[in-house]
Length: 242
Length: 242
Image 1 (cartoon, one colour):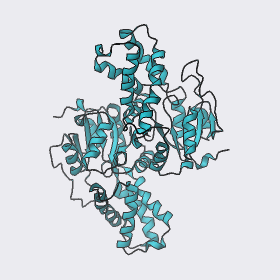
Image 2 (cartoon, rainbow over the protein chains, first blue to last red):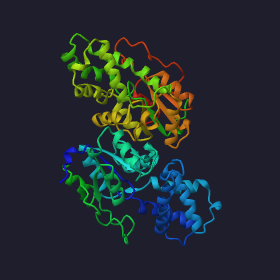
Image 3 (cartoon, rainbow over the protein chains, first blue to last red):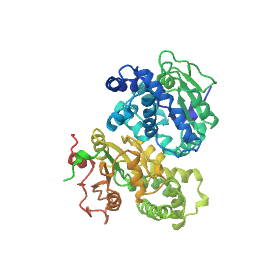
Image 4 (tube, helix red, strand yellow):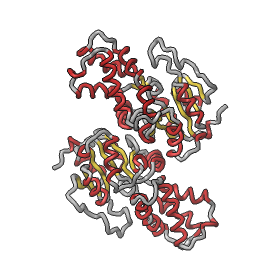
């Protein structure tokens, strides 16, 4: 049993763990695709856009490319996916592409997220540790009332998860030991990287992040310190009153 | 008349502008001095501690020293001031010095700050642009319920105000033009540096920041875009409903 009394701060993965990126991006894609490529399914396009995310960050994690914020990668990836679908990008105004790119700033929390975060915030420092850039996470939080104590993450340390420096430099910014910080994520790979750095770990089951046919992250692949069904369950397990 | 409709984000100096550092530090100094040097006035010590702030940052601004966060400078400056007062530091436990150093994390807002920030937050992004490090500003915000949308400032860009890069890189992080951002401060020098970078400027009169005999920053030294008596006045002038 993990002693939660040692934990001072909780760091949250955001896309998929706190908010539903697939539903939010598809919602904004629907009118866009209606204008430009009515035969393409919005969820399919959202999934294709998301698949570009890991390889794009890989260029930066490997050092082949200097750090740029996620808004920039999302915009480049959008152009790639549009081209892959045979859509003529030159016919679409840049403003319209920018607005669509900002769909990632307008994602809705899962139904338990706000209540769970508010309970956790009373006892712990809570902050995102997302690959999303500061403005993206700020816009999302302001729109949805996500009650972060600070916005930490990739842009603050200018590196992308799961590079160890992202976890370690963030712990250092908080003035804590790794064992005093718990990483909260719906992704086993994120938790594995955090555990390698000495952080505590909390798995949150998000079985429909990738849609109804999701095959990944349906169970905890290691004995994480907390294994939970949502953020309210985490709050209860970690000892926060309702 | 400045068109406030262009402004998207307000950045706030914190020490002196949003919170009363002198009163807060003196409050925590009193019991400490009572134990170690009962004849020293807490306000006088707080002022002496604060006087070390600008030269300490100067070492970093000039490039003679790599960036370290303000908690580190405050701790070094505390040792200097104790020595200047002839107090034997070796007799004081490190934990006690650390606790005193953290008095900067426990400062109270001026009476208008919370209400003013809440009004401004409904219409603008609001964030500190302080030389205080992230954990310091986080602790202060959590204790006093300062409703920041994000914590920006010196540690995020690894440089100290009034270096131009602090203002310019923060504007870039927000994805805005300098003219879309307004710096809010009780210090003419901070506003002058922000204006040089193209930001809008709002002066807040804090006539007792340095105590009843304050001689500096008692009036606006340039025609700032907004000249205000407190954060509620700023909210009114900039067009935020009560």
